[in-house]
Length: 279
Image (cartoon, rainbow, N blue to C red):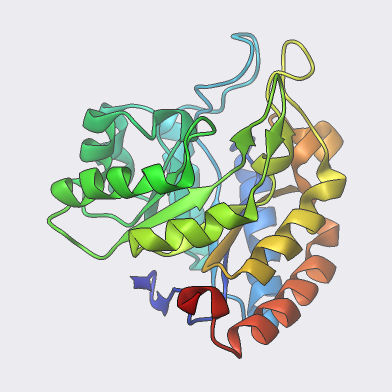
């Protein structure tokens, strides 16, 4: 699959989707995207900048949701113009799909909406590449049905990715089953692992979600070792001050050391065939 000018798939080096959870300001977006571009250029890792103009699924209605679609897309367009990096945002309604598609390079569907047929159709009908997150309540093999819906709407284009962000495991808890990453290869789509939302504790702090960022490197290493096309990681200069998902985002100052390790693992794993395909 071609994505933003580079090849993606299990036979290619992994690509990175990264950025702050929500757009907080234009300056933060430019600064973080600029740093991540420099870092990924140095490490030769294909990179897509991610940040959301709206977080419609916050635990509390009083939590910061973002700057809205008009201002958020303006800022993402500035990131593209000034830095020349592809950008991704998630959307939450059918109406937002066509609007966001005019600006961003990749659209992302929230995990909670993976089974919403009309929504999936609207997003994929834009013709943009789409990263579809598996619902926390879904089995990995169920993603084949979601991909079928997606390709009904996009005319069979080879531009769909499937993304795992953990599975509900009791109240306020998620667990990552690495077998699911291999199972989702059966969709014939590139598989992406969301390392930061997988350590989220949804609603775990009462009026907001908690998280265990110390386990982001653990899960990221495990996912790369299992064999994936891409890794998704939200990052922030000061996670304790992040306006969304602070407890589970990676400090941006620690991204380089983690990405170096992930590159080494990815190279070693993909230098050989995947034995599981013949068992």
